[in-house]
Amino acid sequence: MAETCNCLARRKISMTSVCPWCDLEQSNMHVFFHCPSNKQLWWVAWLWVVVRQGVGASVEDTVLNLFHRTSREEFMLVGNLLWVIWGERKRILHGGKERVEGRSL
Ligand SMILES: [Zn+2]
Image 1: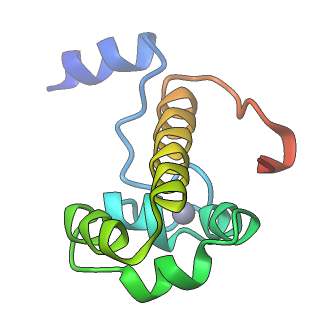
Image 2: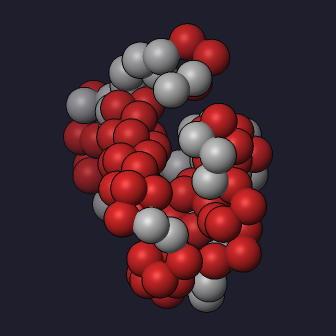
């Protein structure tokens, strides 16, 4: 395990369970829908109200709820934002910096 951690550390891959944006405990639900930093993205995209109403027990439940609660165009934006959040998280965990200063769209 220690060797695995060292290998990951050399590759600048974090083993932390802390959210890369707010230092709260990290889960997929937190990263996508509960993290204060990412809530701003949903606000900017005018999707926070529908996202808040559609949050389920898991990411899969939430995405399914959003599929039923949004127009086709809104759901495409939901997918794009999920992709952006996931990509940014992955980039940070692998030692990169946030690509967009201030996290605006
Ligand atoms: Zn967070």
